[in-house]
Length: 457
Image (cartoon, rainbow, N blue to C red; front, side, top):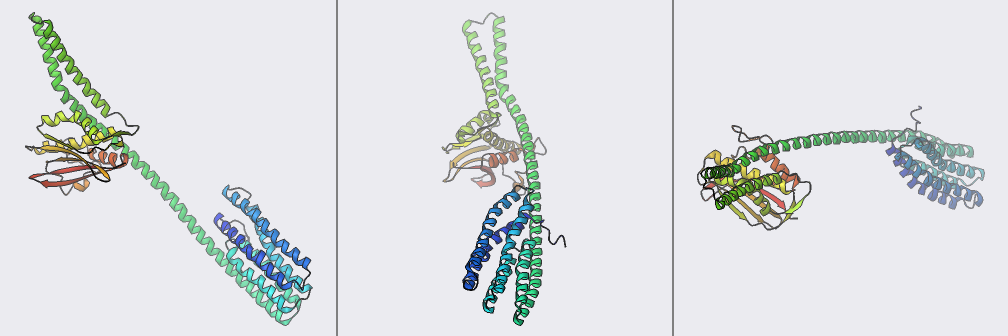
């Protein structure tokens, strides 16, 4: 029983009650009283009716004053919630008391039965409507119901007419049935609210877990990207060694020539200057190579304006010698002229990955008359860069897996399975584009095309 009349309600149910009570005040504190006054103005002193109507207006003002404070207290999770809610329920119930007062005024001033019944029906109608406006907070509904019907029942009994006795009995039964209906409706509201809260808590829990999983996946992606960069760095060091071999050999032979000519007293000034200049040129080439590789691995903290032409030329400074030394024809069809904002070093890493992937595939197949074609062009909405080779293409049974992490066709060699995965992550997440692959067959050539698509900015 104590639980039945508790004021421990969820904020949502209280807010629904506030909304219903404030909107219901128009009917219960303005329209209803005005109709009652029109009916009774010639039967009850106007001063009494005016005071009665003024009380209704004061109730509205009190409601409008308390409701925002109650909402604020709920928002701030203040300890004043129960106190303000109790006060609001008390003020709301005074409307019912006022209808009891008007019923007794009808008895005191012995108004006609028809007028008494009309006023009674107004009170009954408003009490019936309270199930919709106050039903989410049962104690508010119960207080309004009992305080509006009980005085009316006693007034009807006091009036003394047999018809009124029967009406009072009907009202008593109605009060019990309607109160029980209100309680069942309240339980339904409460269960619905509890289910909604459970769903909200479940969604919150799921969102938290999803965020955790997303964070883990991002961390894993970062780790794999780092592994991919380290693997790529190993390939780059191999290319540095490859590019340095010829200049170092030239420096060594030039140094030996200087030493030999010097020992034979045949090193004249002109020859010494010429050989020294050769060593200087070779050294400059070595230094330039270091600059290219250092620039390549410099972190991109900010986006800059670049173009496919600029990025491809930077990549070819690093990889072109290796391609040509393996007798692979390098074809350039750079038709894209539009600049775009990007992370150029990351885009360079992707293009290098794709070119090296084509080179490794060609070398693995030991093809003659092999080529790598780098082609760029623009469409109405996109900038396209394609890297095409005639290495036979990607087998149909693995083409859908080619960008998966740790998937590699070089398991017999030194493949990490991270190069293409890293490339796809960079293009799609960092550059806002798309990286795809498809096979082609034309003019006797068969191979794969890796396509980078960037949106025109």
